[in-house]
Image 1 (cartoon, rainbow, N blue to C red):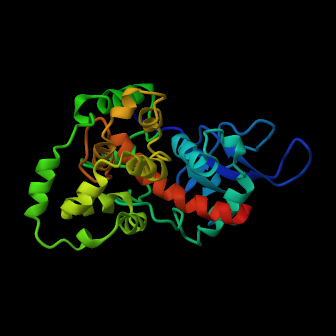
Image 2: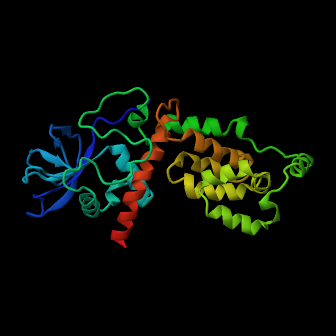
Image 3: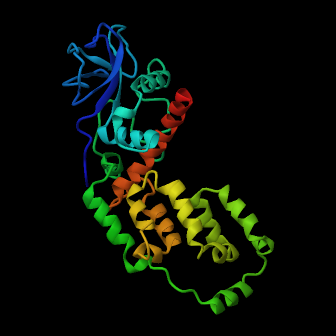
Length: 300
């Protein structure tokens, strides 16, 4: 299991800058815990000179320590993806981010006032290894090996698009009894599904055979939903669902891909296996969503 939570970065501000005595936000790298809610630094953004003093995480209890906000590098990369669409963290406005985080850190806090998702990571002074909580230590950004794993899985026979038997569909439809969706035209069905998250659409297809037959073979419907709801954080899927020309991607059952992605990325305690990091990424992405919305409001 990839672990990459040993050298967090800290977003804070400095009172010294190469262009003069200005207050500027910057990133500290390779920091270490200095006890009692503080950290010391071993390096910062280029161009800054910082006195080596303890920094206070989230809030300052002493009144004389700069306040910092810890980010693991991989989580900061995900925040960059959510806000800018890429991994170039230099495009982030650190001043805006620092101000947002400061407002989300009331006096006495030891984390931002955000929903950290379910399962929620422990909020203790010291990290302890606990069985079932491995998800919190899984590197969420993935690597080349993970890309290969996703490709090998998706391109397997399990996800091939199969020809459905119309006679079988008609026979099952005749036994379904009353289904409120039988009387609805497709455009109404489509508008209903647009109001639902993709996980709810899957459950609706399980509950209604009519909905299942209407949407099951509509690959463009599932392709749109994957692009809108999964690709932003499950970016390894991008080259697989939009292959050029008559590629294997054109023969994928995208409804099966969606159902599989929803299952393997579900964040929960006790989870294990090769997609554990993806589940953590999905949880972290929810936190990034909240920061990104506030960031967008400030930048507009």
